[in-house]
Each structure stands twice: as structure tokens, then as C-alpha cells.
Image: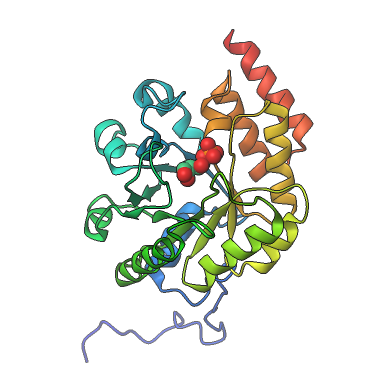
Length: 292
Ligand code: 5RP
């Protein structure tokens, strides 16, 4: 007999092979590649993520704070778990040796001058694979003028991603005329999850946010929304996590802060360190004062 299979004690017959459940809500039945990418987005130790969102230029051009991504944003990247950006910024500005997981903005079309819900899928899955992304992101406009098309766009991206093991993050967009309450976000997030999104980005609401996370069978991360005072933004992040969010995908409240590094670290302390907002604010202020 060849010697490859040796008799001995290395079969550990008495130790059953473990079949662990995957740590992320609603993701247990996904394939290995999907799970592996999701495990690079969400920290397997706590199931949470701090995503830094800098994709705003895809519809509003050089957004305040993002005028020079190379100068202003790259120093923040080491404190983020994930960078959410467009392929243009990724190829032009982000050093390939920066091994941070990328969530790729894959929808677009209208600018702020037009009807925003008129989006299309704006990227091939082939290019996402070429760029080694961990997930794609697409806007879904529930209640918007082009609601159906945006939902179908999402399902097409989900189908394309499933072929190659790339998860899809649906972003529940809020229009000028759309409501922003728990009932609306329950509807929007649940539709995204029912139709295949692997996780959903939505907005925090003061009343009933825990019903939004409870009714959504996949993880929810929150957007930061418009810039607000730092302590308020930290309170929002804390409340969202406390009420079941699996993290943040935050942009303006970080990069438009007067100390983006301080906000990045403070948000991290809340999401991964369970720090109270007041303590996280102290951390932000300390870093801000050190930088003066
Ligand atoms: C744009 C987006 C942004 O990534 C999102 O709004 C997060 O950024 P912010 O915290 O600034 O709201 O999806 O539609």
C-alpha cells in the first residue's frame, strides 16, 4: 500500500467534526464564498461592522468632505472595517495594497439634478470580481417614481452576485416626498430582504427602530444621513446598535466632522466596544484636541 494513509492516532475518531452555524443573521444557508465575503465585512467576533461610506459622488459630484479623497479619506481607512465606494474612486485613488474590504456602489444614472429613483445597474459583476469586492450596493426606492425598476435592478444584481458568491447590500433610499418612519422602513427593508438582499442599509428612526431590525431577516446597517452635531451622531449609532443594527455605513457624519479621525475612532468604540455615546464623545474630543 502507498504510505499516504498511515495507521495511527490522527483520525481523532472520538472528536465529532463540528458543524457550526454561521454567525450572521439569515446567512446560514449561503455558500462558502458568500459567507467568507460577509465575514470580511462583519467582524465574526461580534457580528458588527463599521463601514465608511464615500460613494456620494456617484450622484452628487465632489460632495463636501470628499473633494480630495486621496488627502482627506485615505488616512481614515485604517480605522474602518469596510470602504464603500465607486469603482472610479477605487481605481483612481485607493492603493491596491490597502487590503480593506470593499463594498462597491453598483447603481447609478441620475444626478441630483434629475429624478433620483431613475437608477440603473451601473456595473458588471465581472468588473466587481476583477476588483475583488466583498459586496455590491444598490439603491432601492420603495414608494419612489421608479420603485418597480429599482426593485428589479436589485434582484438582477442579487442573481448576478449569487453566480459568483458576491453578496448584495440593498440601500433603502429616502426621497424628498417619502416618509421616514418605522412603518416605512419596515416595508422597505423587508421587501429588499424578501427579494434576496444579503443585508440592508437603512436609516435610524427614533420611534420603533427595533421593529425594523426585528422584521428584517438579514442584518441591517444604518446610514448616518445629513451631518449633525458629533454627540448626536454618536447617540444615533449607539441607539441603532442597541436596537438591533449590525453596524453603520456612515459617511457625512464622519468625513464632514471637524475631526474625522476622532469620529471614526468614536464610532468604532461604540460599534465594537459597546462604549456609551458620552464616553465615545470624550474620545472624539481628546483626539480632536491632540490634533490642534
Ligand atoms: C448614498 C449612500 C451613502 O453611502 C449613504 O447615504 C451613507 O452616507 P451618509 O452617512 O452620508 O448618509 O448610500 O445614497
